[in-house]
Amino acid sequence: MLRIRLIRTASFRLALLYLALFTASALALGAFVYISVRREILSDFDERIVEETDALKSDFAEGGRERLAGIIEARGSGGAGFSYGLVGPDGKPVAGELRVPAAGARADGWRESQEGDGEEPAESKPEVIRSLATPLGDGSILIVGDELRRSDTILKGVLTALGWAVAATLALGTIGGLWLSAQFLGRIDSMRQTARRLMAGDWSRRIPLSRTDDDLTALARTFNRLFDRIEKLLQANKQVSADIAHDLRKPLAGVLRRLEAARDDTSSGAARDAMNAAIGDVEGVLDTFNALLRIGQVEAGARRAAFRPLDLGGVAREVAEAFAPAAEDEGKTLLLRLDAPLAIAGDKELLVQMIANLIDNALRHTPAGVRIEVGGERTPAGIALSVSDNGPGVAPGDMAAIFQRFYRAGAAQRSSGTGLGLALVAAIADLHGLDCRASDNGPGLRVTLATAVEEE
Image (tube, rainbow, N blue to C red; front, side, top):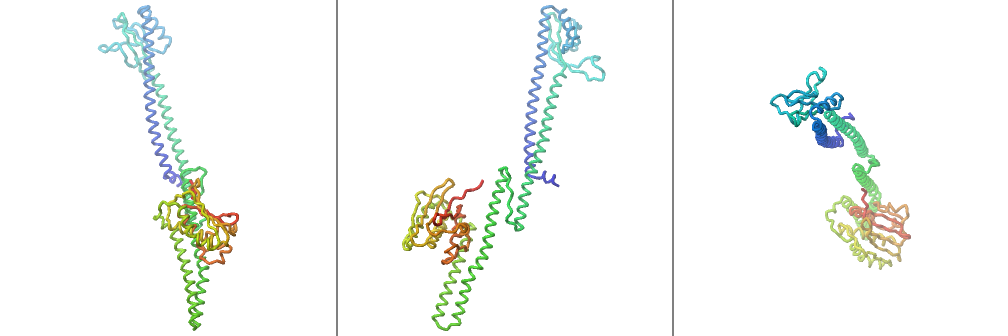
């Protein structure tokens, strides 16, 4: 079963495709090498015969036919490696075993022929001899040849080597393809098992990352970030359900008590006061629901279509100038440090609300005399915008929790509000690709919105 799965994997099929292409290239290269080697071997084969013929012609020029015949007989009996033949002007053999072709055929030039009968054992295949016939000055014909099996042996060796090379390529390619498929299948199985555990409700599971930083590792890292986001949203939804039940029970119970008191109290003044208080509580409940709906819309990315190129620094300046009178009335100082333009693509209305919530949060939870600063800068990763104050700050253990829905820390528990302002800030920041972090301003609180660094 595992073998069938390995063969069916995309990596094995891709390996087979590359193997087929490589084998075809190797065969084409082998054919070119074989043809080139064969041409060189046959050329060298003929050149050796020509050189031997030229040497014997020189001997004939110096000593005549008789000396040439003696040299041929001596070399033929000494196993010089060549085959010889010397035929007189009358066509009769003078020396050697090679003969001129039959009557009517051309006597000079190149030819190939089999050895004569009796020259090899009966069970042996006759050797093919390639020879060169050269007319001499007295009408005689000199024949020099050699067995083609010498060149055939070399060429067969070349073909054998090429065959083994192709066979080794196929074997190693198949083994490599199976190994790659096993590695690929193992990583795919880990992804599949992780997905099954996630579907079963175990959202702590993540796809294991390989030491090799390849495409599958990058894909696994992307899916893990997706699972992190889904887990965060699921936890937020669970928390929202519990928080709504807890935070809205108190105002709704107050509304019920006031309405019951107004029903039992016949005086018009008490009834009017109860009605007004109930209306205020209901308005607070509606504000809470509206804030939750807005956070849900932002987290769903419904406003992404309205993104336009903006200067976040310019938007922050407009918001800060709008809050300046309120800060002055409360005896607080609002400073701007927005010298560099902060280019971003986003929804201006949402960005205005994000910055307004941060400044309003700083004004609401700090005493008179504090300094609130709105600053921006360009960073290697992009941009960063911060809202800081030198007020009482937040406990270190509450830094990460203040962006949760309905969470209130310290003095904020005694103040009015829905507890959703910073949660909305975090949602808008995430929609615009910004990391939202709280840190100690020493003293006070600093909230920084910086371009998120995307993992490879």
